[in-house]
Image 1 (tube, rainbow, N blue to C red):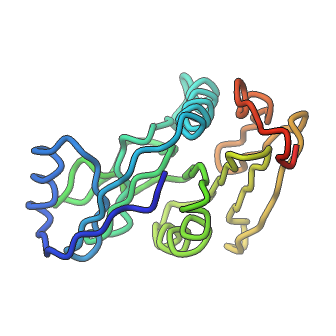
Image 2: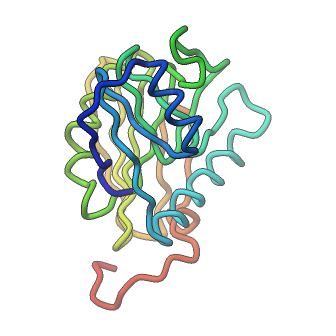
Length: 196
């Protein structure tokens, strides 16, 4: 998804929530500033749907549940983001000011694009790490097979794993799952000059 468009107006939480209700559009929010979320590509939509579907299927009848890109993530009472998919174990918890935003994801997924890759790997990841329950971050490349997984180890150190082959299984430690790279990239057609 493209980097959000920024407005210079100041919004209270109540005004921000009303803006989303009135317009039907998604906006990220940080300390009074709103950022309109741009639409994604066909490939982005396919990949985010694939990973959400795999997570949902794996978690069926389990304590943890998968959520799609419509669920707002609360970093704190003044910062809200949208992820491409997320997992929450147990009931969704929220701040009183914004009951529709989850403050307790354990796993967050972002599908990368040229315009968001640096932001998703850097600033957005730093902000997500402020969430107490957050244990795993999954980045999915659109242009070629690559899934990067950052996970918090038992000693609270962030570790890294990369998967680059469609015959590999992606290990998600936070929910004790393995998901096939082939399933994540199902129906995705790569350009001939991609890193396949």
